[in-house]
Amino acid sequence: MSGNTFGKLFSVTTFGESHGPAIGCVIDGCPPGLPLSEADIQPELDRRKPGTSRHVTQRQESDTVEILSGVYEGVTTGTPIALLIRNEDQRSKDYGNIAESFRPGHADYTYWHKYGVRDPRGGGRSSARLTAPVVGAAAIAKKWLHQQYGTVFKGCMSQLGDIVVPFEDWKHVQDNPFFAATGDAGVIASMETYMDELRKAGDSIGARIDVVAQNIPVGLGQPIYDKLDADIAYAMMGINAVKGVEIGAGFKSIVQKGTEHGDPLTPQGFVGNNAGGVLGGLSTGQDITVSIAIKPTSSIRTPRPSIDKAGNPVMVETFGRHDPCVGIRATPIAEAMLALVLIDHALMHRAQCGDVKVSTPNIEL
Image (cartoon, rainbow, N blue to C red; front, side, top):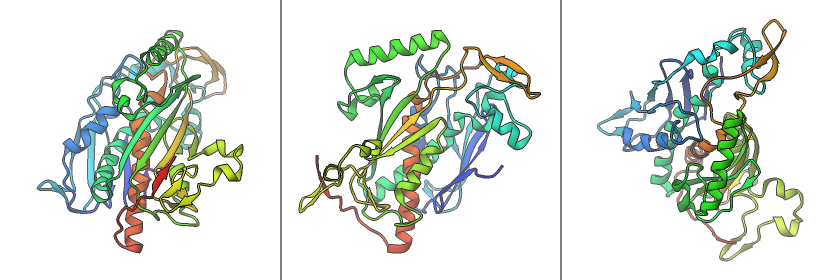
């Protein structure tokens, strides 16, 4: 299997399976001299880890990260950084009934046809468990970007099924299990009730996640084939269960007129940000704004029609521990992929154009 590496200058290669002894990654291209320890990485992993509320999988993983290489006397050396996260709570027997059949909507069918063999335990390599080392690698990217440019990343859930979550303030994101940017207790209660009903019914639902990167240099990206927004879309589609990506106004652009969509420039800066911080494939210095659509979880308890390896009809019911909505834990993952794209482009920009400082145009909304 190829295709396990993301990035060009800051490249991340993941390894492991959902129910193997460990998962992890090797990061190649991290600049030397960055102060780094496990304490810089662990908080991001804690935001993503399972078992944090009744609304997500109850698999109990500490997701404790170990740095195996690439750091000496507390700073990065420029050599490959290896991160290891040991699996602690596998329950492989839960997947015995699907070893010979395929879960509808899951990668079981395509993996088996492509490779002739698959690991049914928790989905093997296709499991969202493999997003943990990506989040760990992105913690390093976030620290470097913040040190260089003051870049910060923010994300929230803006919709759960048909429940639209009104945005109030980023400060609320850490106050609820949904990463919702609202302090409205009624909205959170409705989301909790919705999830409780789904879990009891053995069903699942999708979600919309919004992520923002602030304090970005002007000019990241390339104008033709390595457009910044193209690489962001590519990265977001690489996240498990993502079926749609919007940058800036996204699909709302369809109904906007040119007089509405184009962001005017004034001596004080841009008026609006329909472009999502990218014009002609290059960053404008405004906030990078991205939204992703996450499909309902494929592994559900409700029996679904499928086939076995011999092509015979079967009914499939999944008994493992799963998130009724994988979008609940997706915010740190979406932030992570955005960070990995931006550090890669920042390093490419530095190699071609030299060091730059952030000169972010004021945004008039």
